Image 1 (cartoon, one colour):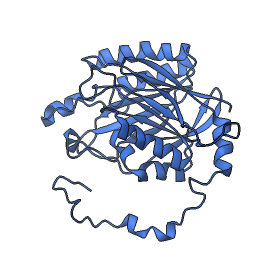
Image 2 (cartoon, one colour):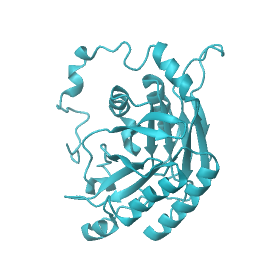
Image 3 (tube, rainbow, N blue to C red):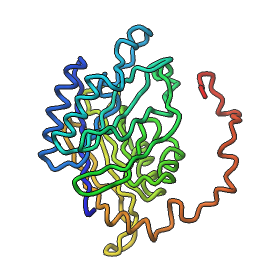
Image 4 (cartoon, one colour):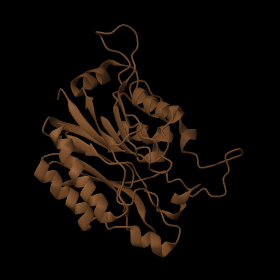
Length: 292
């Protein structure tokens, strides 16, 4: 696989579920015309990352994973011969989840992931957190690639990307909804570098509250034989405006790089990391709103 093209759909949401479905369909067709193999929406596209405070309103905003809204994107994936990663507020017990679903180019649902690190210090305290990180083998026109997913705040924990790498992920897809400033961008650059994999992140553009665009993709390759010294792993960084931004991952190069470089799982000593699984939390990290 020489190339894998991921369309970052940096779009402003509409005010209704129907509006987001229609706008999503229009822009997916544009992404296909641009040559995308995979198209990725920002976090919780079904609501535009709106999380009502009242339980009844929150439930009313949520849609089942097999709803017409979600399934419509599966049908479109088949008709476009393009993988689609749709994000939505999922109806779930005891409370809704922040969820991503990946349909392959045949319209088959191959991955469903619910955000593990919910922002419990904010609105997401009303959501049910996911309990694992998922990967899947995605069949694209260019060939097969192993994908994984994180959502928003997940990227701030090295463990998220590390687990996905250990499970075999080559590309991590990251829907997002927050200001992407230098520190958050640095986190994504680090996750790609230390795990030797690609990371594609899509954010809402400026105009969506608390968002500023700057969707990015990093290929994780710090060195190239044809280039002196180290290199920036950034493939693309969008500006603040609404638009579709295409990230072209050189998969053959990434795979060769992973066979010879020193990061990822090449020289780890997991037997010495037992403290990482300890559940004790001490000051200054104790928070009253923390949920297991």
